[in-house]
Image 1: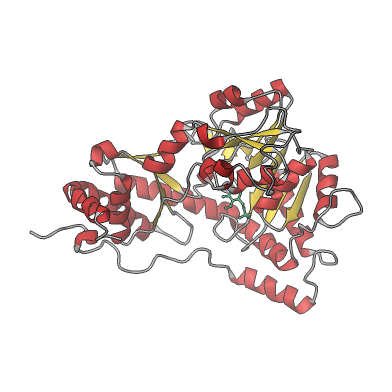
Image 2: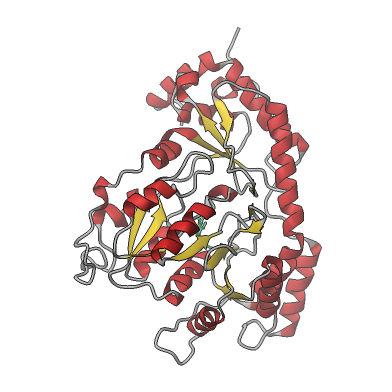
Length: 414
Ligand SMILES: Cc1ncc(COP(=O)(O)O)c(C=O)c1O
């Protein structure tokens, strides 16, 4: 009998392309047309960004929401509003997108990379404690992949040490931690509305806060106000109008993601060597990605062979993240071209060397364990059952994976 797995020439579980995400609704398209007709495309004189900000603040039950050009500058602006700069250290998870670390450097401060814990894969509070120093000024927890992280422990440490907490909610719009929306627990919540996010406008970002003074500072900074620190970080009116529509369907989209996860996991049942990430108790993740954890000891081959096999079955699967201290900026310890901020004399901890940073859990998660499955609202029961079927099929023919791994090693499988 020939091979069963599609990667070795067998019949794939799915041949059709995967549903496109996002698909903007007729209401979004009508709103864009309305702005186009108005000839007012800049938030200086328009109302659309303001409408989105009001709706976003109301959704979160906070006093202030400030729209900006993208999620990266949302984080950068929050750090600046908190007064983080030269000589300061900021606790950042190793397991996140590189933007979370880069913004600290942009503000001339030093990111200190911390490992993740195994239940939500968010910041490990024990490792946070180990890496605090007299120079630590802020903590930036990330609700990575839409799973809320241990905010009680993080806020506890922040209170003890008088630190600012800036939540990176780029993956977690509408996720809840103990009944509270993420982004409302720390001093600032920062969101990205980039194309792939749960709330997508193409490119965009928002900072939320309950602090009036901080909100004022953010508004000054983002739009060339007559203050010392000011830039153009504004969101455009088209993005504002898309956001004001998209937020109306955010809860519905997140509910569909949860339903998709339930369908997938029920169809999957128990598969030795594949375990869904549990998430912390009393949290409601929003599954930017569903995380399935791969056990290479059970399958007998590294994750890459399994991922190749799953992709060949017609299932889009991602292995995207790496511990961000590996990003070239950090081992090189240079950013502004003269060693700053890593060897800045104002950093009393002395020059920083990231080559010895130890984050064993984040390393394992990124290099060997995590498989990111898309459960976007444009997918339905058919797609979710096909994901489960493909995984079960590979598990049933795991002996064939050795040949896949050999093919990868020899360059015969690309
Ligand atoms: C965790 C995280 N933080 C921040 C960002 C930056 O957002 P943006 O792409 O809107 O600048 C991203 C982007 O994907 C992200 O994944």
